[in-house]
Image (cartoon, rainbow, N blue to C red; front, side, top):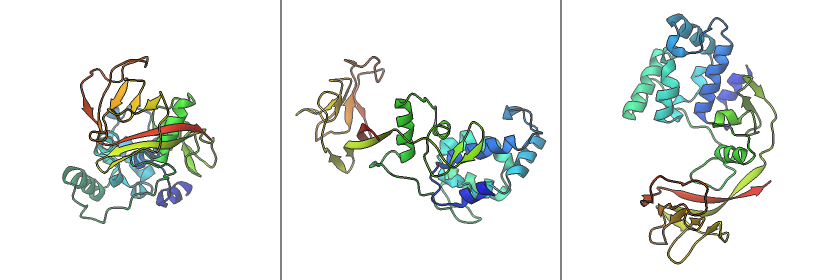
Length: 250
C-alpha cells in the first residue's frame, strides 16, 4: 500500500499532526457506513469501524512527535481507535514525559530544512509564501493542495496522494536573528527593516521595535505606518527567539 510505504519513511517531510489529520479523514472516507461527521455524535460502532480501517496505518504514525496541544485537540478525540498499549504509552508520555513501557519512542522524521532558521521549517516558509500568493490556506494541511512541499504530498481536498505540485514561488532569506546565544545581522533594508544606535531590528519606524545589542529580544509596538496595530498594548514584551527574513522570488 502506497500510504504505508510513505508513513514508514524517515524522510517523509510532513509534520506528524498533518499526517494524522490526513489519515483520519482518509479513513472516514474509506468507511462509508460512517455517515455522521460530528464525532461527538459517533457511536461505539463508528469508532470501531474507523479503527478497523486504519489498524494497519496507525502504528506508522509517530504520535509521540506532536505537541501536547495537538494531541489533546486532534488525537485524543479519536482515542477509541487506539489500541490499549499505544493509548497508555501516549498518556504516560504527554502527562509525565516518561517513555512508553511497551516499545521505544520512534525517531522523528527528517523534515526539509531548505531555510536558514532555528524557528520555522521549510513547510512553514512555504505556508508564508502561499499567503503572499493569496492562496490563503489556514494551516499546513490546507497548504498541501496548493504547494509541492515534498516529492509526494497530500491533496487534502480529494484525500489523494499526489506525485507533483506547484513550485513554491518565494523563498525566505535570513537577515537577522536574536536568541539566548546572541545575534547575527548580515544586513538591513533601509526603511522597511532597519536599526539605530538605540534599537535592533525595527519595522515601520515604530510599528515594531526591538532592543539594542544589550537587549535584542525586548520589543514594543506603536502603530505608525501599518494599517493595523500589531499588539493591543504598547507595553514592552520579550521574544524568546527572533528571526527576520527577506522574501525573494524564486
